[in-house]
Amino acid sequence: MPATRLMPTEESSDLIDLTRDIVAKEVAPHVAQVEASGEFPRDQFRVLGRAGLMSLPYPEEYGGGGQSYEVYLQALEEIATVSASVGVGVSVHALSCFGLFTAGTDEQRKQWLPDMLSGELLGAYCLSEAHAGSDPAAMRTKAVRDGDSYVINGAKAWTTHGGQADFYKVMARTSDDGGRGISCFLVPADTPGLTADNPEQKMGLMGSTTATMLFDDVRIPVERRLGDEGQGLPIALAGLDAGRLGIAAVATGLAQGALDAAVDYAKQRQTFGKAIIDHQGLGFVLADMAAAVESARATYLAAARLRDAGRPYARQASIAKLVCTDNAMRVTTDAVQVFGGAGYTRDFPVERYMREAKVMQIFEGTNQIQRLVISRDLAR
Image (cartoon, rainbow, N blue to C red; front, side):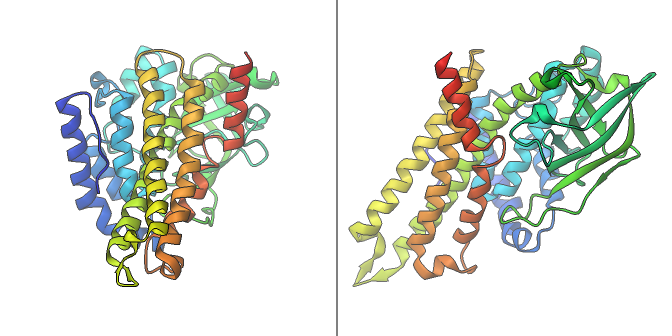
């Protein structure tokens, strides 16, 4: 059953209805095939982009939807309820535009942001490295100034849309001054020397290509640097706060999808003369699943409303990411249990939901890192 939502305006309520309709018609029929084959659903991103669903939290003057995060995240959740891979992709695309919007000059925003938000282009975000995941200040990829250009060399691991994106937001070292020596660049996908390694063979999210991006003397003009030299890490971390809310919404959508599947099955499956949902042992499991999903939704919306009000929300974003993704893991595991032996087969989607939920606890900062962020904020 659809999530119960209290939207702030009639327009935003209509947007949710539109999102549900589009994903039901354009995404849902292809999810099983995409996840089984591992094919990248680029056409689905184009459909969502042309409907304006890839650029919701950005201003209309640049081609965005002009929506608050409270609204954007709920639309994102609706997408992820049908396809977690596509939901993650929409969130990553929004994150890949964040640096240009917040740190770019007026000229840079006017030149590049409309195309990035048009729905025809897809973005990716290059921060992590094989040895520097939770510790981005330890990155080794370098950008060396050479006249009116920078030359980038190195490798960026775990890049969502790696090899599929049209542009990459890249963090690279411009000095040896630790976290203060990192700068941010916007790199077109067709830049000579930029290639993608073979995609990772993952546990889940088969429809979301993940690859290491290789930078071999990648030369880009100085005007493609976002912000000043040394501002890259603050740009990245500010983007991660927003990105964590995106993953919180995606995880909640995934959990909602698992709950819906479990409830439908429990109403139809009969044992001892009645539907298994009417057995207290299973009914209570489903009740706990519903409570976890609605608690997760309330948590990310509380953080989103702080962000929309212009108030600090970093701790609340980490709490939302932690709560929503841990709940998604728990709900999807319970969904498999509700299905019993059938849930352990690929005849039903719940085993896939369970596999997809695991990575939600890992990317955009592991949940151990979220606990570190929260505890440090409490200690200030």
